[in-house]
Image (cartoon, rainbow, N blue to C red; front, top):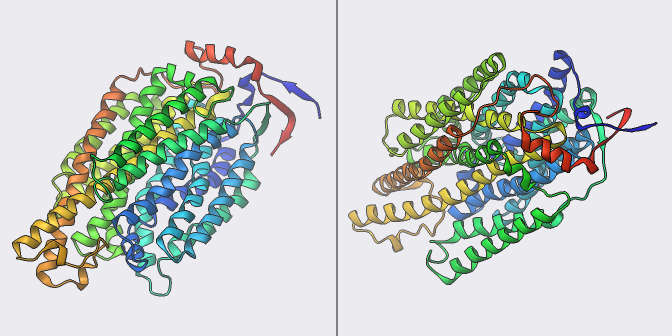
Length: 539
């Protein structure tokens, strides 16, 4: 077959509404699998960690390890999507996810489980990044809001509905917690089959190098930072030589990563993207949204089970207000944005609702009225629904087709990074607060905290005597309120960031954004690397 060098615009494709929906069905299944891998264990974690004899640190790292792997690999998947077959990549990501899930279900200890979760995270990183990239390739920005609603709805079900699915699995005697890892496998296999039959995109070929040094340094810097946050205050003091070594190490690795990225021919996170104000501000907001998206679902499950003594299934059902808020907001607002082409007002409103929701959740206690709690969760759900996908949409509207992968993955990267940092940091805060509140409660009962025998393991409140159970429930309830209060400033930062984003109406084509001077300059600079499309060939 002949080869033709074509401008970046040619990588865009034209598809009918029916073809888009058929292709989206496989993508949405893959995205559901990716989100499910992070959330399905939320309400199951107290049971999992108890049976595997782990503590609060293990509880946090079972979640953080997958998020960290997702964060670290998202830019790699995004860059590969700009260089080779997107269809092959998404199928590879699904295969990696299936392998990691099966191995995680067979784990016999928390260390082994954490290692398998890393593999799951690698696959989930590909699914998260590639779903955004492929959708942007198929659909013009102006129409993308309509389909982003579907994407947001799936993320809503996966993000907040995952804990409900996990709770039901754990409470079903003939299944058990290991099926929390197996449950996504059938969805992944179906997604593979559907994508093979329905997804047909041009195969873009161009010579390029993967920035492995940049990816390694970025991963190392983030890993050291998260390890420090999760261990400080528990294994060693915040003001200690270990803290100094880890913080300085993370800063040095970060500085080296920036140096490598500015000199790399094909950087993982192209520094030139940050010359665009929309992308920079969207990244700042995405970090805050990541804290909310993952922090809320992970620690709410623990709150309902330990502070309110609910079963895993009931814990999932009690998060329904958040599910409904996210589902309705993402679907309705997506359609409105498609109709009007305007998106900034919804980012501002969503960020404001997220800030208010977190601040109100800061009043959370073990005996907080569920009616009030439902209102707070609804506000958070609506806020997430109005911001998650629309931040990606705003960024995609400012870049050409040849950089959709890198730009989309940058937003996904920092959202996952926010989630990883949020879960790790909030988990550390929770462990510290619970320890203090428990010690205070025991002191009032005339019991020494050192003689309580908890050993740092998560308690099973149903086995505790009445007075001690009340102390533990109160401690975890108060601690949960504290971590949501700690998350509120992040949401406020997101609000400030989106207020300063300059709104550009959504384009009705997939070509380069002619109004964006920075993008035109980057396109000229990348002229030598213009893609070569094998005409007439699709995968």
